[in-house]
Image (cartoon, rainbow, N blue to C red; front, side, top):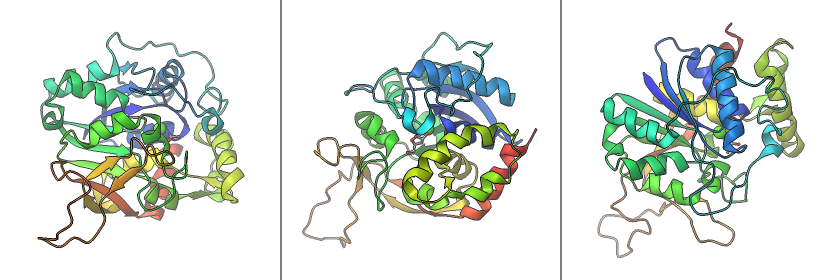
Length: 313
Ligand code: BDR
Ligand code: CA
């Protein structure tokens, strides 16, 4: 499977790269970076650092520095000032390419119609911009897996919104209405339930880099969940891209709430049981292509795979 990764590394973004690297039949074709967990300068430097550390031979293109329609907001409280829990380390020795992440995505999709898959694990600004450059993007990509949303569970960054969608609600809504035919959304309904306990972390050698960066992230989760361990959002999305059978899904049409005072950035679906011919109209335009939203995942299998991925040399 050939994959373009769009990410805001980010501690769990780093884990997603570990996860993909551990699968020999998987090729990371390119990486695009975006604002989100940290400003894009930092997420780009981190993506370069991670490709160097993990031996991933993929170009890194720097993406959007801010959301489409709101000020930049970042999440250093979750990922640390450097985005890697205080362990980013030295400056990268490699540099990002000259095109933007959106240009890279549009160009690669055009050059390889139907062959590339997209794993988007940050705010969706770059994907929305790529749709402006190449309106046929939904037909040119094969599978698209997005980490975002909280459908039937509370949000994380606000009581209704999940962080990736909340960091750029307009971009997320553009992506959901763009007509991607094979679109899977991996949200908090499954990622929170995949919580890795403290013992998972403690079983890793102290010198293990994944364990080191996860310390800050686990402290953050521990501070409000009342238990040790961490939530592996982005690597679960990577796992579901490689193996869709790892999850079960609700198929529906989705939108992002753009105007709610308390609910801006929330993922919504019309979940009423409306029989054919019902007098009630659908709240979400039926023109929107259906997407799959993950509702259950095989957490134990996934966490074993993740342990294997982060301990590979
Ligand atoms: C998402 O937000 C970021 O903090 C994580 O990297 C993940 O992509 C989880 O809500
Ligand atoms: Ca992320």
